[in-house]
Image (tube, rainbow, N blue to C red; front, top):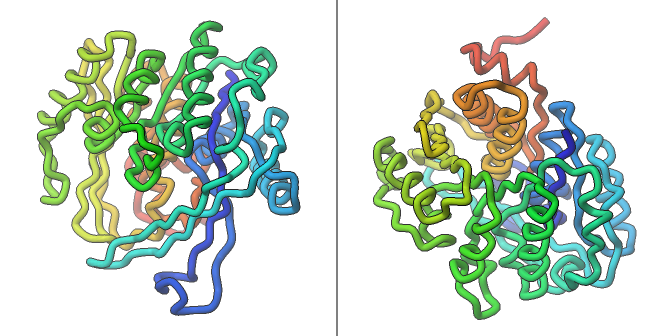
Amino acid sequence: MTVLTLGEIMLRLKPPATNRFFQTPYFEATFGGGEANVAVSLANYGMRAEFCTVLPDNAIGDECLRELKRFNVCTDKIMRGEGRMGVYYLEQGANQLPSKVIYDREYSAISLAKPEAFDWDSIFKGVDWFHITGITPAISPSAMMVSLASVAEAKKRDITVSCDLNYRKNLWRYGVDAPKVMRDLALFIDVAIANEEDCQKSLGIHADVNVKSGKLDAEKYRELSQSVLAEFPNMKSVAITLRGSRSADINSWQACLNDGKNFYLSRSYEINDIVDRVGGGDSFAGGLIYGLNAYDDAQSALEFAVAASCLKHSIGGDFNRVSVADVEKLMRGDGSGRVQR
């Protein structure tokens, strides 16, 4: 099984611990981005994971390639081009102070790339599963065209397509509303991944849920997922994450999956003392792709995805640095955190 992901990877700059911007003169420099995060997760689970993007032809781009290779992500389909490395700044929240993300990705290499620069025959050679997110089409008009072309080309080749809808209000700045693009892209999706805001803001499907209350009604999510499948009959399944936010440090974490025949609800985890929730949704997506291919039943696949993402909340950085054994241990109920000797 070979999974290809396509999107932008960025330089991530974050003050140490929970310091605010310029409270300290230091930034921790790492890499991250939705589709790259998924590729890293899948490589950690032993799958062949390929990543396609455009990187600047400079030392930062070189270092990014080395980092991806260190996680055994195949970088053969990464191109080098004009433009810069996109950057995002992260301020880690705590208690009632939320985390803050500032994007600096205008004129990044992939935002400037044109669809004709992509050799789709070569890019999709040997690929069984293709994953993209709603972030990439929000970056720029040309990235939107690349995104739409990529899913259409994948379906031409009978490749399974998954998409994390990932609505980002701070990115849709080039004069097109997200649903106008994402509803077209959704016509090529087999497996949709989302939260309640993604369904509403990306697809224009109403979500009668109140996540700010900290209490989640699973029946509302059943209705929401059914609405998505009814609107897009090409989709085989839709998974929706259920995050109950008590504070920046304390969340409940759960998910559901609707395949049109059955509605599955995972166990719920209480996550206290969150280390880093950025990349949590990506770790869920990576876990779900692995689970749907590794297990015979959808319930186990969903439980794997939720457990994998639960563990990510205790790991700093964008990447989920866990193994299948780590995740399956938590699935079996061992969340004690006892020292392993």
